[in-house]
Image (cartoon, rainbow, N blue to C red; front, side, top):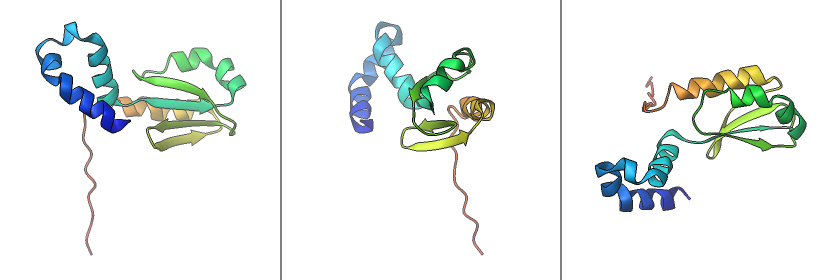
Length: 112
């Protein structure tokens, strides 16, 4: 999926750079690709009960998915980064991800 999106964005890249307002769908795909989608997983009933809190989460591309596990889980493509039995700590970690948008992190290895 990642490769398909990358190829599509390269194909439309010139048009997107020159006139982003004329290609709103491609602009949305680009933003989702660059920023990343977060999926909040939880029990269907718990997600329904906390709907207002979930809708108020300050992250641009957030999806909710029913999950049979216990508690809540926040995942990006291929990696989960937050898990807790309570929603508030998971929301905090999701909103912290917003501040990482556009920042590249480098792993620093310390030698002996």
